[in-house]
Every structure is written in C-alpha cells, then in structure tokens.
Image 1 (tube, rainbow, N blue to C red):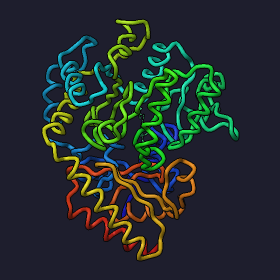
Image 2: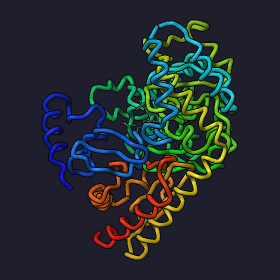
Image 3: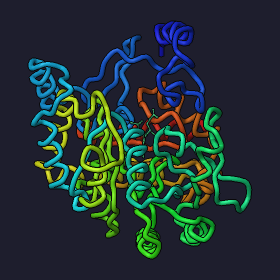
Image 4: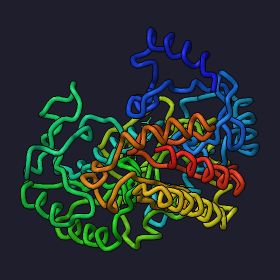
Length: 427
Ligand code: KE4
C-alpha cells in the first residue's frame, strides 16, 4: 500500500504540532507505523491522502454511528450554517436537543451542554463537589474521563487508595482528593470510603471502553449504588463513549442501576464538538446562574453542533431496531475473530455491547485494568498494522474499543473476518 503522502504529511505535521497530532492516540505510538492522513470519509469508508480506502471501525472514536457523511446529519448542518455559526445567546435548538435527551434518559431531568467530554466530566465533578460540599472523588484504574487535572491519576503505590498524578504538569495537590478503586471490585470501593473524610462522588464508565471494552458486572454496579447511598456520595456514569452506542436509553437501562449524574459526548454531537452532563433536578439546580457552582463556555450549545446532534439522536430514536442490528453485526465480527484465532491457536478474548466491540490478545477473560495489562500488545500491534495494510481501520491501541456503524454491511464484516483469519495465520 502506497502511503507516501501520509509519510510526508506526518513529517510536516511533526514540525508544527507536538507529535504531529492534536490528540495523542492518533500518533500510532502504541502500534507503530505512520498514521494515515485522511482526505475524506464516505459511508463506511475512510479515504486517506494516498487514495487508499479503509473500512472504518473507529468512526472518530465513536461519534459517527451512521458512518461518514450521513445525508440527514449533513443536510441539518448545512441548513444550520445558513443561519449563522454561533451567537453566544440561547437558541431553541439547545432546548430541542435537551428535551430529546431528557425524553430518552430516565436519570436525566436537566442537562447542560459543553464542547467536549472532558469539559462535561470536569464540570460534573465540580457540580458533585458543590452539591455535597465534599472534596474527595473516587475513580477506577483503567477508566478514562478526559484530561482534566483531577482525573489524570494513576494508582498510587501499593494499597494506597489516594492516587498520584499520571501526567507531568499536574501538581500532587490537584490529585490528593482523587482516590482509586479497582473496576468490578466493591471491596476496593469500600476501602476508599474508609480512607476518606468525605467523598463527593464516584465516577465510573459503566461500560468501560478505555482499557479495551470491559463492561461492569451488573451486581457490582448495584453494590456501588448502595455504597454511594450509604455514604451520601453521588454516582456519576461517564457515558461519553457508551452513550447512544451500547443502547438507546443508557447503561442504566441494561444494568438496572440509576446514576445521579450522567456525562455524554461523541454521538450527541453527530461528529461536531458537543459534550453534556445532566441528572437529578436538585443537583443541576446548583449550577450557575441558578446556583453557585460556576461553569461556562463560549461555544457551549453551538447551534451548528446542536443541529448535528439533533439529526443524529432523532434518527436513533426513530429507528428502534438499530441497536440490535448493530449488535448482531458486532457479535458476528467477534465470533468470526474468535473462530479464526482458535484455528491458529491464538488466545483471544472478545466482548460486545450494542455497537461497541472489543478484543484482547489475552489468555484469560478481562474484568479490570490489571487483567487488560496482561494482553499481548506486541501481537495487537502486528495485527493492527496488517489489517490496516489490508484496508481495515481499527483503533490504534489494545486499550480502545471498536465500533460498528450502520454503514458497515454484513458483506464488509465477512471480508474483515477473512482478512483477520489470514493475518492470524501469519501472526
Ligand atoms: P473528549 O474530551 O475527548 O471529547 O472526551 C473525553 C472522554 C471522557 N470520557 C470517556 C469515557 C471517553 O472515552 C472520553 C474520550 N475517549 C477517547 C477515546 N478513548 C477519545 C479519543 C482521544 O482521546 O483522541
């Protein structure tokens, strides 16, 4: 495959932008090789600047559930642009999208829009601290909630529950209120509550997608809910990735556990920059200008982004069967991968939730980050590079999730499985 233009473009970009990218994962560091510079997207395909076509299983890391250049989303954006790009004043489109999301998420009574998932989570954490008047928060190792300081935290040494910064530039003071628990391990959560004078909230990806796909056990989430109730801490579901990807009505509708706040992003922007946080009316009432917890944004609720989000969510709400169709395709792809890997004695763990799928080159099932870290990332890198060469674009890290869009056909799934089988043979 000729990727000369991407090579040149990457060299140029690296002289202008740190690492040549505007988000680190795009640099292909964990898989090696040259990131493809994209010229356009068409339905299920990405086309790079060397005119190579790839079946896209990343879809901009989740937003594009209808694939690239979906007609209804594109028309909605073009129509909105004709009225102006931004006003810094309220528009009815914001209320329309708010009303739509509230009608779909049982736990969301009021919602605030921002411009990214990071902003949504950062604001929800501040809101939880303001509402409870407590400082400490609990997150889980392996969950990613955007790059705000308090959440760039890794497991502290040994049994310590208090985290330490996972990035230079984050003062230890900023993370001393962040405690870490192990995913699917309720005892580790209880220990955080013992070690802390007061916990404002527990934040979790109920269907984790940032350590690879690792859904939380149903009964673990139920226990988490009762531990939060016991201590008066809020439970925040970070569904920036899983929202409108695992199912229509949120993780609460498939797990039976209802959070106090939910963060959203990606699909609700239809490909444009949108994040959101929402939940119980009494909690949201603490937000400025109604309450004292400050939060703001120049382009929050941007009318063009709202138009894209409205078109995307309206289409999902109108097509009740879309998630079962996407889940069937995701299951077919993962069964195909498992059969192919088995033929070549390659240990592979797979999982699916709606349009989300994940696979680990791992001997054992993965239920937390420690398990995920035992995966063969070398083998993943070889697989990723070979599939890319064959025209299939997968997430460039073992610790990410794949997605099925409505533009990906059964035929494409079969072609992907055939390519995977020949590559497993070479691995
Ligand atoms: P953004 O700020 O990137 O819009 O959202 C942050 C975020 C928050 N919460 C969850 C559960 C997320 O998955 C994300 C962002 N996801 C990553 C993919 N693993 C975005 C890709 C990237 O960082 O470039």
